[in-house]
Amino acid sequence: MATQNFSTVIAHATDADFRTWGLEFSTALQACGLAQTTDTGQINWTTVLRPTAANGVGGYEIYKFTDALQATDPIFIKLEYGTGPVATQPGVWVTIGTATNGAGTLSGNLSSRTAMWPYDRAAGGIRSTSTPYQSYFCFDGSYLGVIHKLEGLTAYNGGVWPNAAFMIGRPSDSSGNYIGGGYVFLKNTAAFGTPQNNPWIIFCMNTTTGVSYSTTSYFSLAPYSLSATMIPSGDIQVFPCFASMPLITPVNWAIYGLIAETSQGTTAHTAVLGAAQDYLMIGSGAMGAALPNNTLYSLLMKFQ
Image (cartoon, rainbow, N blue to C red; front, side):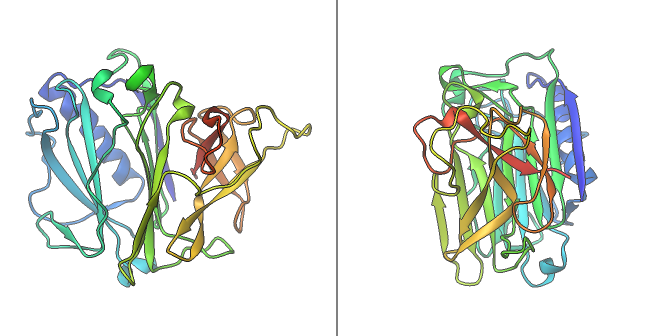
């Protein structure tokens, strides 16, 4: 497993700006070990031009998982880079499939093509083109976690959000071991107010039956509305996340935690399924059990 952790600025006003943040994103993925395919027509970061119209795509890359399950349960990821809902905003789109035609088109058990920006980001934009924002990438062969430019952009009602935030991984058995037969896609869908108050969508695909399931809530359970730590020893409380495949199946790469116990950008070493792992508090995400105050809890993503 490998991680990338860096703090850099972001802008999207020129071709050079686009090439800078896009190449940074691409380089981080590959530095973590995600394997780029040989599909033709993939983006050239030396010559690509910034799309000048909103929602314009400059190019794409195709990646694949590298674990032993890839031979029998393949997962391919198409990343498109371009301009977001406003001409000066960056844009990233994600599609997941189980096959590729070798020329950039995914097929098989597909997810929807999804823009990686929150609700009404057209009302916001890049917070500052001179302030560095933190990014976190992690890949272990069976799971990919991406947080690019944490709190670097604004959206509806002043909510702050990364340029892109998503996790893709295989489900797990009760011991935390990855299993085949499907994939899980955690993605942001809307931002309101504080960074902790942003709902996520979980998309679950059973690649054996082709059945998929998606919801904005009920993928984790936690005690009602805790606003402060209940553990005097300094330990933390964490709560597992589950996928519907449609059999309810745990995932070992995403958990929920109490914001009062783990600050944004810090890691917690804990065992939820199987062996203990490092999880990064990303400081954003709606509580999976749809509690009335979403600002109390946040997603932590596997980061080691």
